Image 1 (cartoon, helix red, strand yellow):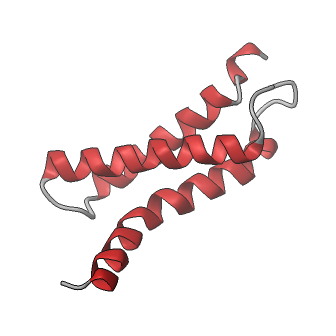
Image 2 (cartoon, helix red, strand yellow; image 1 turned 30 degrees about the vertical axis):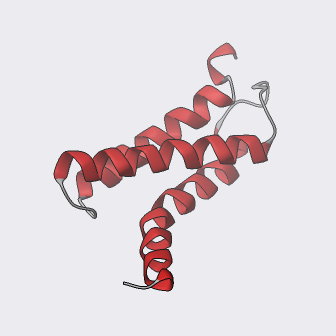
Length: 92
């Protein structure tokens, strides 16, 4: 397998985490209270991406392969929880 094949596989693995993190970060101001303070949107996006990638890696470790729906359910829950925590929404 060449370099570009490996890069393609890694980007395809990370794409769901990046997409969910971006969507949750952009939708957060519509859902979370306005009084919630926290880091800027770019920092929350990075935190959400990291939470998503860790979740996907844990899913590969636990199930032995990528693409299980259970992993994607946990991915959405993990990114939403990371967004809620990083926005400090529990204080409002």
